[in-house]
Length: 206
Image (cartoon, rainbow, N blue to C red):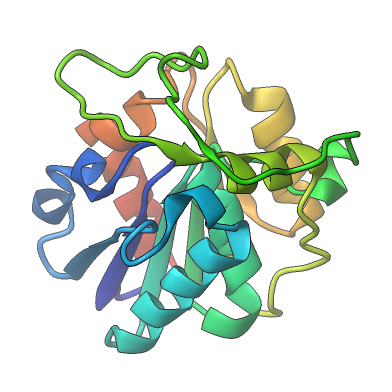
């Protein structure tokens, strides 16, 4: 499909800067990276707040518009899809929704945490920032996405490490295609130009 606008959505504790180089990989598109935390009191930010940021970004974009979302941002994009109605949705190892991971006995509470101190090391030179404990708790408890809008062309991308929980099972549950990223790490999905090239090929094959 012709991708007029590409809306990029970062993951937990990161920001728009993780998508450096994406414009060069999609030269014919208007590439916008959403800042999920912009204008929010992060300690009280919810997954719904993040989803609404994506809805606003899609509403401001020229169609056809593709949303490409990574990790926690992928779950937020799934929550936003019913209202945003993107023409295509690309999920890079998204945090799995309730329908895939099941419910967990977690009580979300306000606050923030340091993602690196919590055991999610960032690559050297990659900035990290505090993340919402409330949004993370909602993710761990299980956020429900019963279905994606009919007709939404969907691609799930996952490497070996997260293949079971964020790969084929998720793509099959929501009627999407699956791209096997092999040995690529979670960070490779946003940093490796070869992954971006495979995504561009998938879009062109529509």
